[in-house]
Length: 307
Image (cartoon, rainbow, N blue to C red; front, side):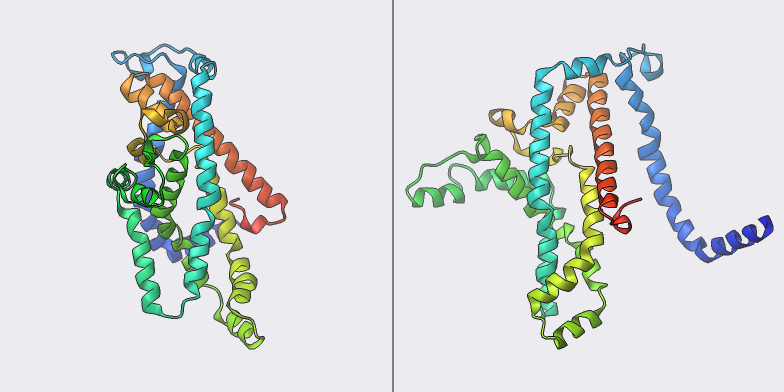
């Protein structure tokens, strides 16, 4: 029996050895840059002293978590993070799907490729550059205020006004990521059997009926998996974007966990507190993934779950 299993495994190894070899660089990368640094998590349970190092610093148990949860400002930061993240998820998640569905209905291949390429470009521009562009657009002399004033309104410094800041964050985030996020949906749509569409056309189905009865149902497994993966980022409201766009005038609605960690860790050098906050965020993300994955399975969609 063991000999049969050994021969079977050996045969599989020979069959897929090229793929296994291609996995090695990726595994080395994750081992060095993601798994080995995990030992730094112990900082959350220690009173870290720079001169003594991580291992020699004294243990303090859950002291940093207790001080964190007794700080009223932490709850303000947590609230901002959840609100901004859910806004981005609710308004940003469907846009790449709609974009891929609508663009897939365009018959002109050249036009489709041009639109796809243009939509990808914002993804490759850093938030440092975008912040400068948006500061100009939303400044007092910018085009937005010119339009407002043309209709008789008063100029508003949008990025310093807490009434508009979150809306601008969500809109600019969607603009930067919808093209790149649609790639996986384009790939899924291209793999749908064309005979299904041909049969639907013969039955008299129009473009929208083909979209609703063929494209969307066939995309559901991909949408489920992408939604589960998105839940891991519910507490990841976008450090790069907010750090480059916010200011002290909008701290009450824009300060999130990541910017709080940045100030605690790198500005005030409270490494242990920053690690405790980061660990809390990771645990919440893990719990959310497990919960959403379980919900998908309970809904009878086991094939659409991650595990």
